[in-house]
Length: 387
Image 1 (cartoon, one colour):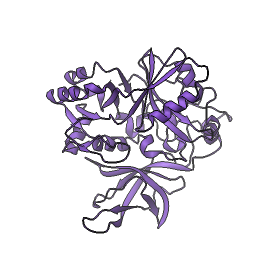
Image 2 (tube, helix red, strand yellow):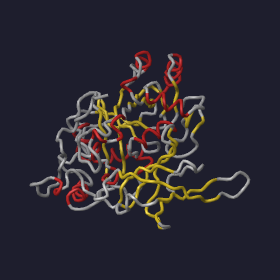
Image 3 (cartoon, helix red, strand yellow):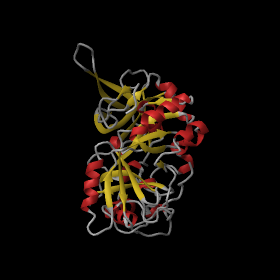
Image 4 (cartoon, one colour):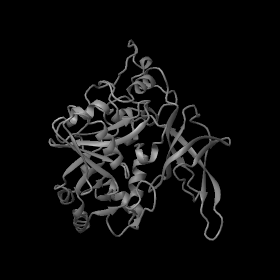
C-alpha cells in the first residue's frame, strides 16, 4: 500500500488511500491521465498451461478461447441458476492468463477454478507478489509518466462500455462511459513505492479511490465489490455488453442468461442517481431508496464528484417510474450523540431500460425468432486495444 494518504477503513477498498488531501485536484489529474491510483487491495491470479484459455472458456460467460496475447476482456462466473458468483478482468500474455478480482475473492476463486480442473492441463496461482496501479484517461498520460509503467508485468485495459455486445442501455456512442479509459497495470508489489516516487517526481499526482469511484459512477460502470449481491444477474447492470458473450457454447448459468434476454425481463435495474447537494449526508452501500415511503431499491455505490456533486448508483425494482420522486434514507453519525436518520432527495437516470428489453431481445430484432444467443457482434474482442 502506498503511504501518505487517508486510508479507507472498510469495504472493498479497505487499506488503500481514499484520498491524499485534495480529492478535487486528484479527480482532475485522473481526467488528464496524470493521476495514479493504488489499487493494491485487488487480488490477482494467474492460470498457466497449454489448455488455459479453452478450459476457462468452458464455464465462464465470455468468449476467451481465442483471446490473443495483450488483449483484454472481462468475464463472469455464474451459479447454475445464473447469479453472479465471481467477476474478473482477464488478460492473456501468451504464456499465462491473468485474472484480477476484488479483495477477498482471490483464494475462493482459485479454489473454485481448481474444483473445475479435472484432467485439464492448467495450474492456478494467487499472485501475492503482484499489485495493481490504475490510470484513468490512459491515452492522455504524458510520456515520462507512461514510461514509469512500461515495465509492468501486464496491463489490462477496460473494454467498458465498448464491446458491441448485447445492451440494455444506450449504444456505445451515446453512453456516458464512452470517455472511460481505465488501465490496470500489474507491477511487482515490491516496486510500488518506487513507481509512486517516480510518478510524483515527474509531476504526476497520487489519487485516491474517492476520485476514481466518482468517475466510475459517472460512467455507469458496474463493480462486483459494490453492486453485486447474492441475487444479482448480469442483465440488471447492463453487464452483458462487456462481460457476457451470447454466441458461444454452454457455460454455467447460460440458460438463465438466454431466458431473460429472450423471454423475461430483469427483475431489478441499475440506475444513476443525482443526489440533493444541499444534504451533508452521503448514502452508504445498502441504504434504502424510497418512493412514497415504500422501499423500491438500495444504493450500491455513492461518491462526491468534483463537478457533479453527490452521485450514486442504485439497484431498483425494474417497474419504478423514472420520473418518480426518490428519497434515500441514510444514517448520519453525530459526535457525542446518537446517530440520526435523514432522507436525501434524488433524481434518477435509468441505466437498464425500464421496459427490460435488450438489443438482442427477439422483438427488438425484427424477423428473428427465439434463440439462446443474440450478441450484435460475434467478435468477442470488438473494441479491445482502443486505449
